Image 1 (cartoon, each protein chain N blue to C red):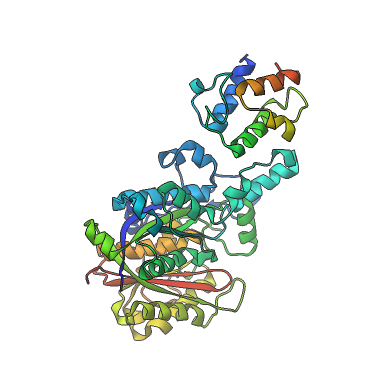
Image 2: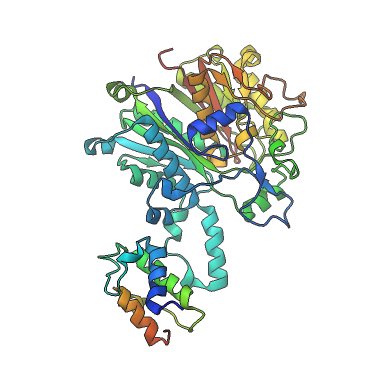
Length: 412
Length: 83
């Protein structure tokens, strides 16, 4: 069987414009949350988000190309370029049909719809951008990455709300295992920060309103959590066949073992409180990876900081891992980076990969008052130095889509 | 005040991401300034926006078909009383 290895990492996030900066800040427990600067929030109950700051598209792509992309595609192309550079990836023309992209997103270019609708209503149809449709479409993150790097194999773009980012790793593994690709640029991207979704999610009571303390607002598994912090960003990793990686002497961060998917088939926003939907995805991921619960040391949790998610995820981890659940180190990257929505699963996957590679588990910051309903070890406040043989990343989306992906130390 | 050419040149530079030196009256939008059909539509919208405060005009599809060079834009604007 062809193994799939992680040989390059790239990220554009609120806590770093490279994967390594992201990881360093994650381990250090740095929060990326702050007051929203992108638009006026004076009439809104939620005034905080985790914004990507100082992102210059021209640092990664030509200016004209960037003008034809929505921000979510610009993030994806930048993260993919960073991952390709990190991997030292050189693709010959002969190889291109066997190189693929899998870039998931939740909302695609929804912000373009909001902006162009305003143009249509205020300035008339003649002023609507001819670029609107090919920038807004959610497949464009994948297609732009493929265009940018010359990947002529499949370009996949799963849409699965906040589980999206994990789908791409399952797809990458499947492509490589089936012998359909040797290299897959896989990850998630999201850039949907706009008044409309903030207003809608605030009205849904899904967002934290801790406006006076933005860096303390995202507090997964804490008794005083009051919702998630809206974020944006992209994470892309190079998934490469073992044969190709070995042949070029590539550095290997971790092995991508496999993943599992399920659907709650239950409710548009709430997870199954008994945790069975998420449990099913985790159990399927372990089975697909040929691993037992006892083989896993770290769980990069979905851990949104909403009252419902964190309690049901705790139940689900107990169901999936049995008695081993209490021995796991668990943490939520969202406590620092915010909720990257369609990129969130990929952020968890990157945390899992780096935890394995660097033998350190990042913390769950702001976990100050334990919630009796969340009684596992969430690595509160401080990172933990420890060997990580294998790690899983969880992601659960509105609509009940659940994803879980397993990584393992390569050669271990 | 900047000349009509200079103002058109600035819009072309911003939309097509070319250098100001490349933009001459005789420059072909497609052949010299590397625009594709979407760029040309986008450019005409930007020209309408940029000169909307000087005259009430619209670049219709049949007008846009005749716009091949920077000079064609200048001529169109002049015909509509913009100088």
